[in-house]
Image (tube, rainbow, N blue to C red; front, side, top):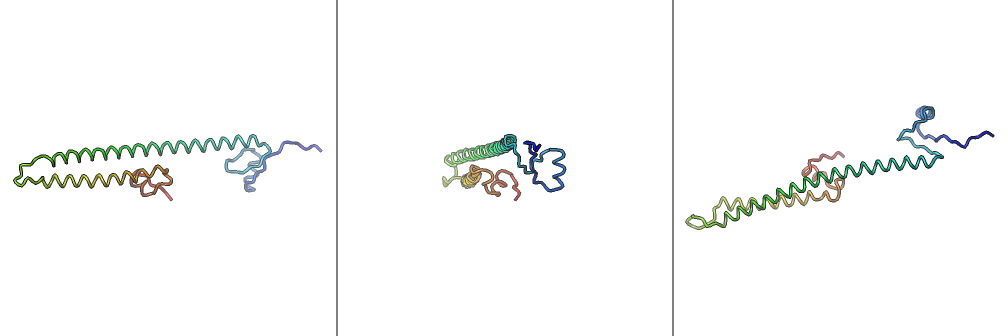
Length: 153
């Protein structure tokens, strides 16, 4: 009984692919094989897993750098608004030469406008910080409005 211990992998690909694969003995990454050589299969799976994890890490690093840049830029913008508010308040506190001693209406309007803008920008920053959950768990609107990302469904 001259049977060999060597077994060809069983290929569960469609019949048209089966004849091509068995003659060329090339493995298609999308095909499923059952093989007696579990060490080789294990190494291939380990390589595939390592590649998937490397790609995941790379994509997360890119997302992290984008979030870091956008969040710190917005924090700096918010800080500049606070500095503007300090200057406007100082101007408002200066004694005026107006007969009634009332603060300048334009300066008061500027202060109120800056306060409203600071409130708006703080809300925006809090929304942007939702990325701490990961880009995949952050709302599409947040990603679009604050990070310029258009996510396909």
